Image (cartoon, rainbow, N blue to C red; front, side, top):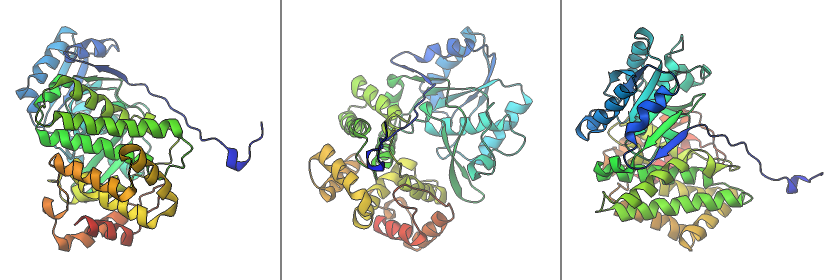
Length: 391
């Protein structure tokens, strides 16, 4: 069969190796899942202590002990995981015979743990993977996760974002393997502060939009799936507001978040990711700004900028607006932004403590990243325009 260029179909490779176990009271199976791989000693990584307070830590440890798996605790991974903390854990892995990493936490813990698992088998510094100076090692330590906050989909992909506090750089890297097994117990997330549920929901919507904007309208199945996931997130998060312990919307939110960035919602799509790059600069510059909050602030200004300046991306925005809200682009952007605010998210850089005098510096830092996007590789001037609109 000979096809003209106009007839050439979109194509993709999709391969997912992570075993997802989702449901109530599933935390206790993690020990047996690790034991199946003949692993006897893990580094248990976690954030700043919430898993001790909500009982998850005790359940994980009991599961490991029942399976005969020894563990070394490593707490203190911050919401924007740092290279310094990663390097600290890497040394533990190298000196204490660690065979695998078990991340018990949210996306930050998972992201840091991917870097730890890779760094543990590298001679050089794992930061070189984030700079593009070193290839991700194929023999990283196996990674397992018990998820306590949904949003990043880090439990279902090979991506990781880490901040170098010395250089104020926040960069992504993609490692050779995603987690082998991820446990998602929606009941665990019922105790999350509302702010974190909102941040995870907005992160998921942003992931989906980053894969959608600029699509060529050929990928009908993927586009429909993508918008359906956006709608599911909006429905679930809205249902949880004031009813955070409701199981069904929480479970739907967890699953939508995982599917939002495991690759399925972007099959055949060209990929944008400018908003994430713009946000990485903000939370790298000011770590008190959570990733989800930064995305809430930047999403609408960026979408308006694209609609105004990038003709080839307009059809995708028009389809998105019609399919999600059955209206025009500007009204749809306004409705999405208003939804974020209704959930309690900030709407401007000013609200999160960024000074107006810092806005040009954000654009300068952005220009240093060399970001690539299917929509447009933004210049420093482009970034400045978006940041100013977000201020």
